Length: 350
Ligand code: B12
Ligand code: SF4
Ligand code: SF4
Image (cartoon, rainbow, N blue to C red; front, side, top):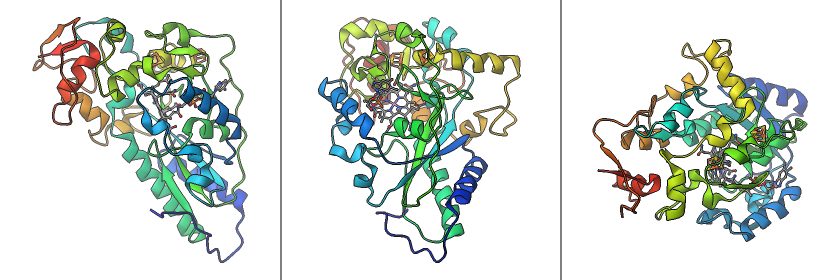
């Protein structure tokens, strides 16, 4: 991968509008469901990010406080960046059983995003291939690829690139996929034409705020990460605060409640159930299968190490589960993934 963006040596003038269209076609060929292009002006969200940090909503997410203005000024992170090519990769749509797993105390719920391969590697690989195709077409150019791997405002950039609108749960939503997708991007010095944002469709709905077990969405578009079960079960290094434990329930890795309740996702799940949902990944097992079948590692593998079956989220027989109101004292270490999950879920996995 090219390190800093440098001035491209382009031997001929390019039709950047045609190139943008070609990049989107290649993106689809590489398995992305949508690709859009944004400029780098994030001035409108800078005050919101600063306020979020100031209110302490980042909790122990120290990486959110580092890097100064690099997060909101792409050219400070990668000098020369003019445009951001933003890409959407859908993950498993088979959310139909989620509520029944959540309601069954003998099962452990793993957020749907964690059931496939490590998305960082999958997206990065595909974005790198996309950049490689551009390079073969136009010659050397400046770029870097990212996915959840650097100080990048991914959701806002994707919104600007027309990939969807911001839901009140703060995630990006699209008509086709709800919010069950990952985002990744290519920072580039190519002056590609930008896409227009799409309209927002939340209206007066507030279901995601109401359903959140820990009331982490403290206002529309504002999340207190310290209360979010995703933070508590995936990011937090210490024990989960006692008062939040009963609310975490059997969610052992991440949380999807605010997405599952959303009418956009529910519509897609219903289509999936009826078999009328069109496969967008070309796999015989339906949308999401291509992503899932690439092999187990990353978050999915971490979940499996806990004894949670990737496809049904049932606890394996190897683990006996007992409920514990008290902190079990287990601490996260790389060598002891079970111990590290136990306090998170409020369950003692002995
Ligand atoms: C930190 C982080 C978290 C934290 C905090 C989440 C958060 N909402 O901030 C925690 C650990 C809780 C988390 C959880 C999850 N995450 Co996360 N996370 C990130 C990360 C690394 C940074 C997000 C960030 O910048 N937060 C800071 C806040 C301040 O930013 P913001 O939400 O954009 O805030 C703006 C809005 O509030 C806006 N705003 C304020 N008022 C208003 C009003 C209106 C009208 C509007 C429109 C906007 C607006 O202004 C603010 C400032 O810009 C991104 C990857 C990345 N580099 O971007 C992934 C990312 C957002 N996460 C992702 C995922 C999948 C999840 C989970 C679904 C995982 C799970 N199932 O458990 C949950 C969802 C929880 C939720 N409801 O957000 C995906 C989301 C994809 C998508 N469809 O949008 C991302 C993009 C990773 C990726 N590459 O795919 N995550
Ligand atoms: S992921 Fe769960 S805990 Fe976090 S905001 Fe959504 S519903 Fe609330
Ligand atoms: S549940 Fe309602 S408010 Fe929340 S993201 Fe979906 S449409 Fe928007």
